Length: 93
Image (cartoon, rainbow, N blue to C red; front, top):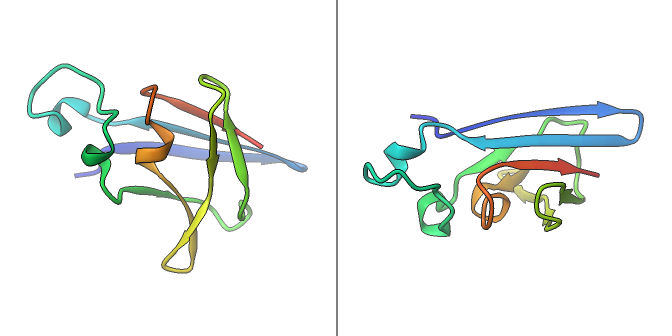
């Protein structure tokens, strides 16, 4: 089951990625809490489209910075890093 929903958009040099958890209660053993712990997401990652390469994004909701990582020769952002303190992410670069 997929527990994340994400989409990316680009305009000239600007890039955004939106990431949200999907069906979070299934990830928290039925508890109605946001799945922010890194153990919840383990190695779950959002694969970025080819036009979004390596770089650092800033989460507009939290101000935190998140770096892309290469995994299996693709640029990804790991959910544990994106959702470490807030259950939604609007990443800009």
